[in-house]
Image 1: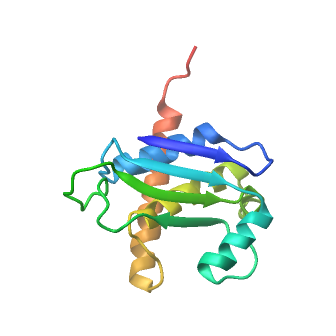
Image 2: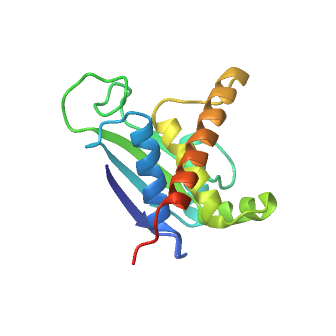
Length: 158
């Protein structure tokens, strides 16, 4: 996968973990391995502005997903040839840090979860309706559990 991460947040984040979990999720979901995804990590002010402009929200949010056209090559349901550009994810480490504290885990774990959540939105999943939420959050949890298990089982590099 071509995964570009741009950190404009002014905070140090686990970019290698974010890249690894997004790559894992995309491959597990059957996305074309040549697909490209951009991940932008922003400060709380920028996230607040994006949330207001694109989602009509107030205040910051944790993750925003901006998928390309639904028929974009690279998605599992696409048979179209061409450059597989999936879209853009935007993450807020400040919001993630507050949520992680409330949830009792690390900011890195929260960012990994938000990355998978955003990837699923890019792939067309939603959680607006109860059945959709059950499917999406179940899949999100399975992907994270599999990724964590694989990561724990991987031998340490020397």
